[in-house]
Length: 410
Ligand SMILES: Cc1ncc(COP(=O)(O)O)c(C=O)c1O
Image (cartoon, helix red, strand yellow):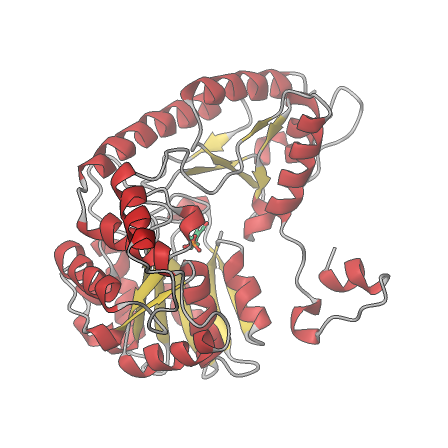
């Protein structure tokens, strides 16, 4: 249901720029699962988009020290000099990218970075190419900014990755941006240097198209996968690439709300204009904490990733053992995006025919008390996303219940 339909009856008519945006499927499922839990049902929620680890102690301590030092006031508009310097070092150290301080911006989460970038650059009707499955916020942010999301289906056969042919075919004179996300939420698919190369070659031919890359899950990659980012691979695109990252996922800091980006100074400046009238600056305390995250010890990232990899293996093998499900092995992030085409047409014990991935996920919630998110929420069906950022014991219990529920379908 769109916002328009939801709130119209309350006597409020929302602005047209948000009228066609639906309430997030993920939030709806989460709300239903939580309500079932409150009724005493033993629901396992595999929908969370955040690590189950705690924010590291040295990061918390840096925040406490900042408070004691009195760093509780507004900071510079798009990031304190200390944090911008830490980000400059991070880009250089981990990505071989040189961004000057005026090419770096900090915001209240990577989500606000995306919002600032779209708000600062899109005119009504401008097109933004978004490969599906996509993180739901991409198309909603583009629509709020009165742009036109152009979805390109990237199915399992292409590893959920965009191909050069599809990109070339989608570019028009109105294309403003291409949004890429590696490793991806929801598919966990990541682009290697070889995967990126043909896409970057296409972009080189179209100088009016800008590239936004969301590297949020950079540190969560498996089996020795070598993470790369386009501005590093193709310096000729650097002056029209926005490299987005943040501390939320790598450092288990989702609640601190700090995201950042490197990009051309003119864009960074325009994004600061948006931010100046939205939040004035990101939280001072969270910025101090993020300095500690980016400059402090990094060894624990490997341990956490190893733990995620064990859970990925558990979930992928558990799902693939179920007749009718098909789960690709993801290269990164903490999600699996499994195909459930084999479940369509089957009938539940109560006589309901499963027609869509939404029906399948509703059945899993009702029958197995396991909450997962249908692919339709991410623009690609019939699939469902599992977030495995939860304990192995919970994952095992969830897989046993999913297998039993699937076996009850006829
Ligand atoms: C791909 C991707 N990018 C960005 C974000 C937003 O992160 P932040 O917490 O920094 O706003 C998320 C959060 O789920 C995400 O999955």
